Length: 170
Image (tube, rainbow, N blue to C red; front, side, top):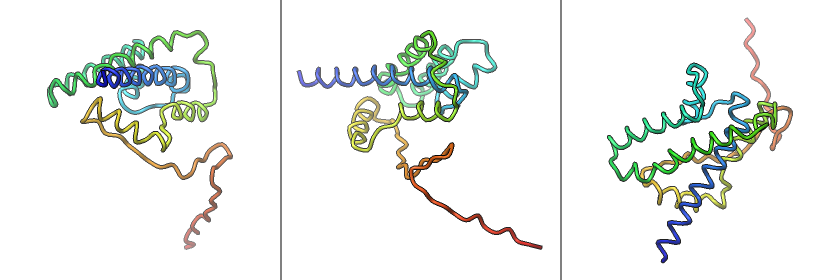
């Protein structure tokens, strides 16, 4: 019973995360032309040269990555990763078909900010996220950074003024 509860929590988290990511990418990243990393970034770049739907390209990139993962890391990796690799392109494609989703904002900075915020984990949730990710894929890695300052378009979370170095006069 306890394993079933844990499995359902992991399954729900995988689905919810992929729905949220699909929405964020379709609503903010793709319309603004902001490039992401990973399979989505590769898909966005390739979609500029290949006349196919971005979601289909992301699916192909994910399948290629799964094949490489299977060849290098084996079936356990594939089983732990296959859900997100297949669900994310489905949810991305569904979100792209929502009428008006690409017109939520025309500001590239706001698009990058909103697209990124929907993929950010607050510090109090970090341990739970790490545990969840490790339970799904023990070989996964996380890039964790602490944000000390946010700048752009005339705002800053912390005012820091640095004098530019003087240029040498010859």
